[in-house]
Length: 208
View 1 (cartoon, rainbow, N blue to C red):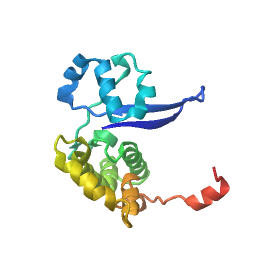
View 2: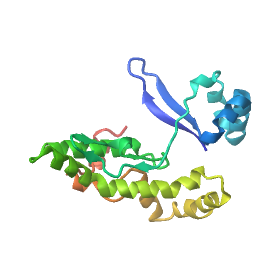
View 3: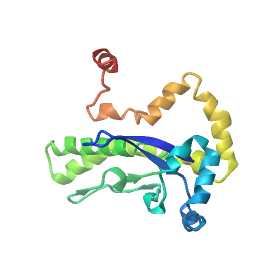
């Protein structure tokens, strides 16, 4: 799997930046390094010819960071004077792109719980309780979808391309997919006292 992800504008320079990624099994990292950049670039271009311009800017393997992903969920996120949030509580492969979103919701739940009354232990437990159902749901969804993009087997890819891809274009497929990749499946906002912005009003005020 290869891709490009816009990462925003660097403050101070105004330069737009992006991240280029390539999926690689951890047990194949040394073999990848031994083959060299030229072999990797050739494989990348064969899969995605339009990437050639970006690949030309990479001339040192040190420019590429190897990130390890794993599905792990801390069974007891809250302990005495301690709470785990974000990846420290629920790490996963980034198929649904919810790492930052989930961490922000965890942080909001913690802030809400700490603002309440009662012993600290009870408030930390409350923060975890506010997020537990949504975390459990997305850990299961991510684990379910990861083989469709990361497995060596052809069957998950066939299921993705032959069944899921067409269904994602037929109502209610687009709405279901949008809800899932925006982190809104399971309705996490209401429990935290949050609501969706009025995007229609935002667009009217600033149509850009």
